[in-house]
Length: 520
Image 1: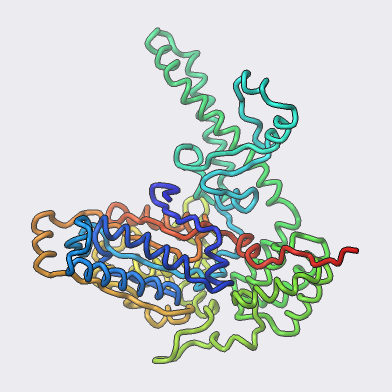
Image 2: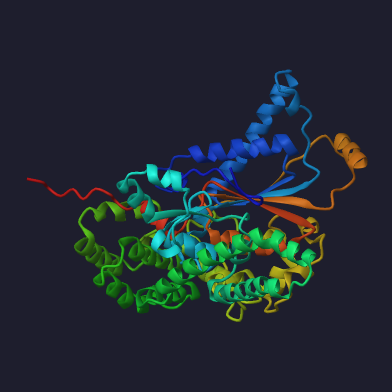
């Protein structure tokens, strides 16, 4: 399902819990079927690059489906449309990232405008149900109004659906910006609209007046959009300025920066005592577990006891589910935190401590207004999942960043990734992230490929498909769009995923809903 021109989602809401809690690989098969559909339209992906065990399963399934198609073709059973498929001329590669490689980034509070809307009110299939007290109600035709009963009217008056996609020009400007600069953008748009409205007073001829009248519907639409987004931004600001939000953000940013997590425990205990929603507390505990390689057993038992006393004994099952998903673990059971040595099995846990240093995940001097690195999306922390994509697509930039420079990514020469394809140059660093690492070349008949290249010529813009298995956050989408902007016009990035997730949805997959209270 296309959510945007550059975002395709299978919208499998349960894909996260299916993969990591129930260990059900059904969504891997559905993802393979969807990607196979793309291959049948555009030709095979010339190279499949990926990180993570489920990503490897998906790649193996794609290779198997190709073999099955070849077998059908050789026996004359294949459809005419599927015959003679070759590696695509306009596709560069498919990059698959397994969500479990980087649980940490998804657990952080998103700080882009679209990400914060998702955290605050929730976005489902490009729509948000927002309280009419915040954005006002939609004007309805008089005839429809009179036919409704008072109960229906009051029910519907509580929520209003807001469309959040590229059809709203103002939202397109705001969506991927860090929330810190959203106020400035709204202010500039308001001033421009005001001057546009004022232009009617300076119109002297009938032609100028006609031009103004023709533009009036556009101005009115922009004005409505401005009112909605100003009200939404004010509501989010009320939330972000609260004492609790600041405390949560402080704990998260200290964990992301690699500070000693035990210093954050008092803050988490205070949040439990203040009865914040359970998913908020669990997010912080899981974040520490992911970033630090588990909690000390004594601390974990202490937090379990506090949560069970504060929120109910049914959450013993919640902790069991989180441990099964490997989101919350005692530190002693995390031997994979040690760096995998040459020839050994890949790490069973992502070593954020090593990767934070070797992939420059923390960039303190990043500008939110005029960003030069993807770290702007989390105000100084670069999501590991997107850094891994940069290791494939922006090698010169990553190498300069690791050495301590900050060369703009757009200055990297275009043939860089074709000269050193896949993970080349980053193999040892990438081993510190959890799961299998692979780079597979899909070959076709050499003569047929050469003949097609002669006939069609080399396509100037190559498409890269980036598939997130297990879900992607809006903040990671914003970071990928930032890379796509730098890579244009050489490359076009199409973002594919099983679903859109955030930290709260990850926790909801594990939280036990029943309370098991004995009723007399």
